[in-house]
Length: 597
View 1: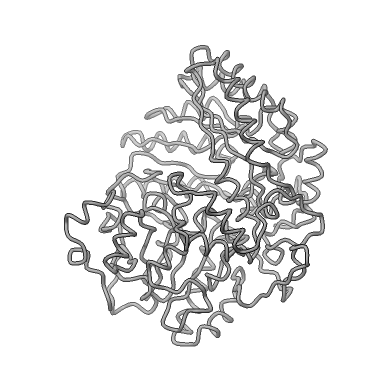
View 2 (view 1 turned 180 degrees about the horizontal axis):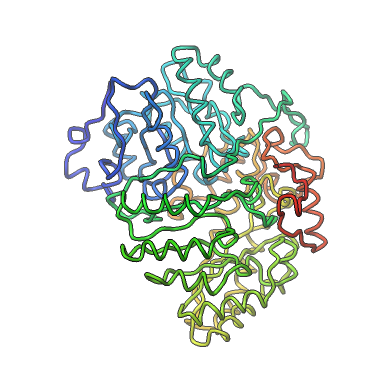
């Protein structure tokens, strides 16, 4: 089998000339390398972003563990190289290879690509191109691997549909095993026959089996056949496979700690939140299982921090017990326990005290909007007093700064809502006296499978005006307030790709051919390149972004089900416009018949 020999392909001087060469050598602690003779099926898990980003992704760790636990299956990793290394690979004719065995990706049986963010779409083509794999599925012969896609963007993969053979909707722990069984059994069969068989697996979407027609105004007329692909989800997290050890990189990654998922899904129903809709229903891993995994992962990695992951960690039913028990058990090893973004109305003094047992981590909260009126519209259900009470507790326990996330450009937003962000920050500071606030401001982007999938996206000029108002109001607060905001130009393209149809795939390919890679990094993103791409393909960017959708409009993702019904989402959209709250669902006690359970 062909293997890339880096020592021969690149001199020491050439390797050291690229940024962070450790991204490309592999050989990390806890990798899995299988003997060639025992392999029936090989799968490359490719992440269309830098090593530091991909190695921080929990889904990659889980699938790597599951696949390598299967007899006869080899799973290895690959990441998008930084352009300096990418250019050198093209110059030296070095194909994109796996880190474990240095096998070119084109020599694997399948390549699974994780789709976490729309601005990585050109990186998908970058990966395929560097691997020497034809970009479009219809151009690949039998000698090339099947290209599989998954992740949150797979819930509307249409802008990437010509480049993939199969997409998996939803959670992959069980489905990937079924897919492997089919690929093993049909090894050597024609691609068309293999794809037809994979399409029979629940959650598997094969774009080539579907066709789309359009009205004269550009809206979708029909998607055929009318077969709906329904997402996969794991019923019992305790029985779901979870790695007892993870790879420990040689260089710092974005989330350089143990990620330990304690729950999946969310009961809150925030109307802007795609994750809260597509990962329904809410499920929890038992405290006993979490503690067992935590102890194994600490021993197998040597990490000094565990991050307890879920969409809303303080909604976990046994959160105080879990943190207290973990902090006690891991204190001797000086292992810190941290939580991601917290709900301010669910935070407690006991949780905060427990988090300080070893060392104090930063605390992040997401009020999302400045006014109670707008928070009701987005179903955040958070009062100003909830915010002030939680901040007071936090500061009284010794934290010097809190981080607060807000969005601007939300449906129904007024100028006074922007001013209310500044008023809220001013009041937080007054309660914290000499403490500080770090603000993260992002633009709202309508997402598929949410109540706001019908709304138009706010224009760049309007967002810039609102940000200018906010900055002027925050300026008198001086150094007590730090803030940063998202790139509104990049947000515009993210929105277009998020709700794009199949025709947008030609724009993605054209932008890549124009040099578009690493668009999620500010130094490489070019709005003009994307505008040119839309214009040259005869498509209107505003059609995909600044346009209110009609109630009965057929969406590009109409045939792909997250489990949440369109009727439920529309009802939530109407409640938003009325400023009414939908309380969190509680199984049989309070069910809104969203369609998932």
